[in-house]
Image (cartoon, rainbow, N blue to C red):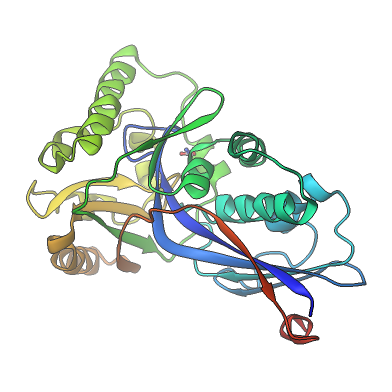
Length: 308
Ligand code: HSE
């Protein structure tokens, strides 16, 4: 019976406010990629989020990453079952790249180390934060190398994700940033980032409202994020601990506690409705594990049929 490789890759939210290109968290929502070897040219199928927009050929990011390790993609069938919203700042491209690299590593017997995988993912992505959280799971800081350093996750931390109906590409959101920032903005943000890492590691959620502030990217990107001011109005230091732009946006990450998450989500829905903003509002938790791959047996013709 032929074997298929099944890879799950979690959504991620990068920057976490003051940690531009450095901090990120893996969330409990994942894409699944299945790769089967069989004779014939490459076949790709995308179902779920982004179907119709995500390419079904060698330019699909999963395939680009597979080719980075395997070279030729002839003889592969690739099926992407996507759940991560596409083009919304929740790491859909990092999930595709990391899934493709991990699949190439397993299929090609390449023996890439975790550091090799991160370096390759960062090269394909252009930044390492989403990929580090996707590969490692949990909350991570990217230090030079690039190297992913895990930060302990407070047990009662939860999030509410706000995903607007519009898409913004990372390229567009990076073009909105200035080439230089005032020293005072850099210093203030650095203090918040270090404080945030320490507060998370020590489980001090009460300190987050003072630390989830950024002056390096959020002021320039806020105009691209529908409803950001309405959602920021929810921060009360009690149920709602802070509001950050998720990656390059336009999604928003609302920081909260497990027992307050449902109420905060409801308040976010009300605030967005009053602001006339259409968005999906969902409670999310930290995913403790990153990308996972496993071989599964496939009944003859089964995956081929599902790919069509
Ligand atoms: N750190 C990257 C950025 C994340 O803010 O552009 C993109 O998701």
